[in-house]
Amino acid sequence: MSRLKITNFQDGGHGWFAVKRSLLKELDLMTKISSCSYQKGETVYLEEDCDAALFFDAYAKKQTGVSPKDNSWEGWQTISQSLFDIKKSYSDNSPVRKYPRFQIKDKPVLSVGLKVKLYGKEYIVTNILGKVTVKEVSTGNNYSLRKIQLDELTVD
Image (tube, rainbow, N blue to C red):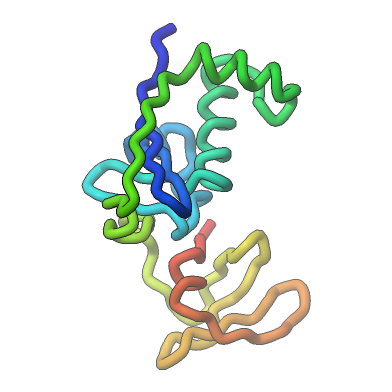
């Protein structure tokens, strides 16, 4: 098995792992990646803490049948060394921060009555004029969404 080549971009404050959009689609991760990640062309720069962890777990599970979450730290180190060839790139002013935030291409257009998910909870869109508002299915509470939350919405 050949090792997947990935570049880890770092600056003084954070880091991102560059992977192809097609690989995220293949691993069924497109709706799970947050807007804390960035994109340029067909490359997605996965935020190092959460989004990259989702990717590494899904990729390892597909390749080995084992989830790193099910292993000890030592076990994960062994798996990662066999699967990934990670090149590090450090810059005080990483170009990644200048790229557009990640978003799913062809994301459905919001409409009143549409069921959406945000941070694991289900909502129904109640208004799209002006501020987008939603009603939480489990509690019936209404919320106005901020721009960053709109980027995080997913549709089943």
